[in-house]
Length: 246
Image 1: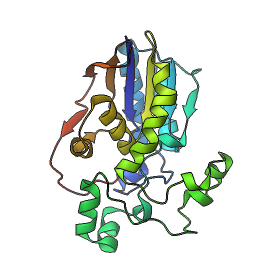
Image 2: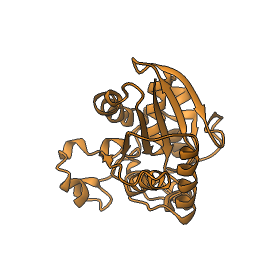
Image 3: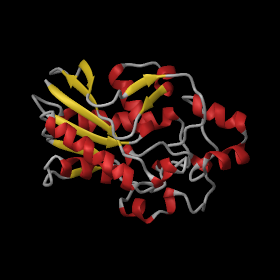
Image 4: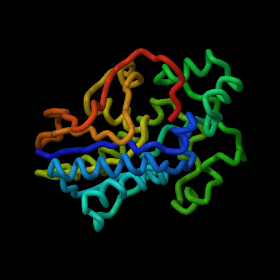
């Protein structure tokens, strides 16, 4: 039996400011760092010893993976970073707080974007300084410009996350392997949807708390046996009650 542990990064500056961070590189806050340290110590106490750790290329995800592992005493375990685990790209909403988003795009459009699985946010324009297509990080990774989004629906996010899961992460879940993914709210939503075979509607409604581990026990064929949690509750379904940036 293998085990997959999924952790959303700790509180970031974007979370604290109620911003749509998306692909913006928003650093962890001191609270986020402290919470992740507690998560690592909790996992170590529960007996976890990871064989691999996967993160996005955004610093809040990379730092989350490193803090959890260091807090467990696994300072030598390398991180596998990939842009396909990045947060959903929020297009022209990126970097805006809730007030700015409402003032710019209106309550109706923001409401529909948060509730929809397929609706695309207004895309960034060519040359926008927020665009990953002109970001030196993505140029250094030699990613084809056509693969770098200017906006994404949740469905679009799924379409890059799940192929990476199938080709790179899932094959590592052999025997008694233990794997850690330190990720983001929306990229983890679509991964959980895939693992738990959730409907699009329930995927949208998933609430994923920062720094709280979700543990999946999988059989030899990577089929879900059990989902457990340690610490605070990690998943709930709820009606949409407000704009929740990521």
